[in-house]
Image (tube, rainbow over all chains, first blue to last red; front, side, top):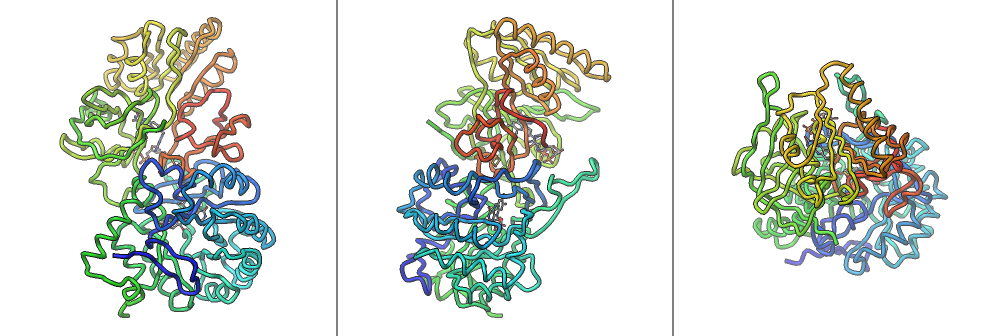
Length: 306
Length: 272
Ligand SMILES: Cc1cc2nc3c(=O)[nH]c(=O)nc-3n(C[C@H](O)[C@H](O)[C@H](O)COP(=O)(O)OP(=O)(O)OC[C@H]3O[C@@H](n4cnc5c(N)ncnc54)[C@H](O)[C@@H]3O)c2cc1C
Ligand SMILES: Cc1cc2nc3c(=O)[nH]c(=O)nc-3n(C[C@H](O)[C@H](O)[C@H](O)COP(=O)(O)O)c2cc1C
Ligand code: FES
């Protein structure tokens, strides 16, 4: 069956299947090349890029929780230039949509990053992280305030050229649809949701927090019900394609997100269960779709009887 | 050339070593041999028993203890949720393994080499001494808190000279550190090599002594890991500026793929 995904409003853009990998959980893609054929994936979203290199937060920065994990990596990366020079050329970008995930501290910086990436042939789209809970200098503000989120979207769209702009939403808000609509109105081409949930963990023996940063982002199967709810609400509120993210760990999960309206999904924490996880999921998803007798994914999408 | 792979391997057996308060806390886990072309002592694998449900997502890192024509042996200590469950693995069970990962210890056949192990840090040295072309150039100092028969010390001692130091009282630790100080100085004077593996406070002591005596020294670091392949950035350690290898961003390097073995003068063990 043809798994290719054409996106409304984006005639020149498609994914060969709906399974992508989420930012920060698939490195720069290269790390996973020994474990599967990258070009079989629907696409990859690379680790968040900033203009200048960032050292991230102190250790410990990850902790395991029941059915999930906490992270406060704090966007460690070697900067956008180093990504373009050292990492991008190693990716089979002609056969694999490579989506750059970006993070910045103000709309001007977001635009600067975008204009650098917009010139790169190897970049298929730009995903804007307005929702990182781990960075102090205002990171959280953009994602939690509709006007600010719209300002970032406009700034990025102005310089993105023909690269589709995906805005990644935070679940750490009272009403996610307000932000979703604001960024849609500001010109976003797609939405991805959700980023991690704000959380923490402690150790009663050492009386220390599990993360040096104390608070971090919760991800993994534990957050799937929250993610599903967010995607369902957002899909009903906007008319642009939505990519579902949050706890996806099986072919059934992918269909669940499509059932509530997602066009595609990103697999995050499950990539740590085993490094060939996403490659296997693509195959298992195809088998499940066949087994269930689904002949038209577009017809299945959003068909929840609620 | 990399040859990492992710495979499911059958457990051949899971043999307990020694006893602590009537309980088994140390195990030699023997698995079917994976189809690796090559591996180096000091490298590790990520292990996730196939029976684990999603309540525990991450695999756990373990040093490659030994590889033979028939099997891959890991040696582990029960410390928490994951290793407690691993202790119940039986022959015929299946585990997922990916590796060999990381960089391994330097092997310099003709250089007098001092192996310093703290507790379960002895595991990678089993493979090291058994694959070393000139084991007579090796010597080990082993600091341990549990009875000696809990560790694969015999397997090392049959091949090279070693000294074991039991730490029961605080004074024992002081004596062990004095002993390491003296030995590291000797190896410095003969232009030797020092390799260390053990808990982080132990590595900090070794690092301090190695820098003091200006001896070439490698440390195998331990951190929490999620992916094991350099992707999650959860396992980083501070490194010196001259270590700007690929992917090292702003002074922090992933232990899983830039290590776990680092030169003592290149890492800063202040965090974690
Ligand atoms: C490269 C490398 C090689 C290793 N080789 C061996 C080996 O050969 N044999 C062996 O027994 N152990 C080895 N370890 C340590 C082993 O990975 C941990 O003991 C194991 O992950 C603990 O899992 P758990 O679920 O039982 O503990 P958890 O329930 O996750 O934690 C229990 C306690 O152990 C600590 N801990 C968790 N993970 C680690 C870790 N990676 N390193 C140190 N402390 C940890 C936690 O902070 C906590 O205090 C190695 C670690 C690394 C990084
Ligand atoms: C270790 C780690 C690092 C992450 N880094 C980023 C990042 O750099 N940019 C970003 O937008 N999201 C980042 N995320 C969030 C994920 O992309 C994803 O939105 C989230 O983990 C939820 O999906 P999951 O439950 O499938 O993991 C990170 C998540 C994890 C676990
Ligand atoms: S364990 Fe993920 S980067 Fe090292």
